[in-house]
Length: 170
Image 1 (cartoon, rainbow, N blue to C red):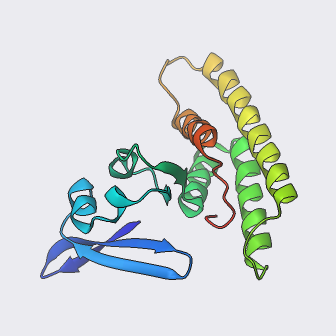
Image 2 (image 1 turned 90 degrees about the horizontal axis):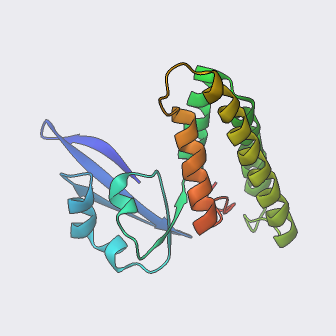
């Protein structure tokens, strides 16, 4: 992830990379791909990266991608506040429940059985969300794509590539 920081009255970015017990921070004048290339971790990495869907991260096709749980919760909160969709409320409750459950454990992960149940519930909520949005799109007079549909499609895409709800990333 990255966050802005003012340095000599100019905007810079602190890029944060973490895995397990290791966290590395780099300061760079840019946020995007130029900084990522300069830092050099992601281009050489061969695993799964969890991020906020910033386009610069998505450009690394040699990696598997997952959505950051904190960013996903923030997006769900926006959807709930702006539209009160049932699927978004259910998804947010599910993510919060799993996060709380995992945070209380010494090993900080789900059992294999819990993970399977979580996948099932996650898919069930996504399917309910698609149905709810289809109903709303049929009622809409303007044929524009709903923001919420984009989030469901993105979740579905990543769910197909890699299980999004790696409990350690939530």
